[in-house]
Image (tube, rainbow, N blue to C red; front, top):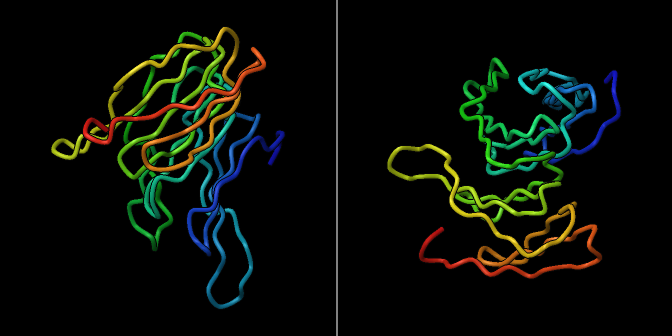
Length: 171
């Protein structure tokens, strides 16, 4: 990498992804015969620092950036190591600082706009879309952690941690 590594996430025992200050996401895989780790893809769709990455499934992950977008990446062909950006999600009005996967069909993002946004996968269209904005913090939302498929926590520069409960019927 040519920039600070801000985040990494394990996709599988033989693959991990990392986000960097240099605006890229790199995909690393372990060769099955040599056991050597190699960077197999550099994903350069963001225009500012990639702050965090989170795995949705062995074939999908999300990255968020100071460019105020979230990118959803899906793996096409395992043999060619091809990852494609299948969605660019926007909605925050300031830097996005954290992302966490709640379930295979839901993730949340925290931002310097003091909010948490909920994003959902529509099972019929296979499109990721905005679902809700959760307000309650009075300063930047810096971190998110999942407790269960219907519960997560957010940490903020307002010196608070909030516990959020999602309705399992709607996400």
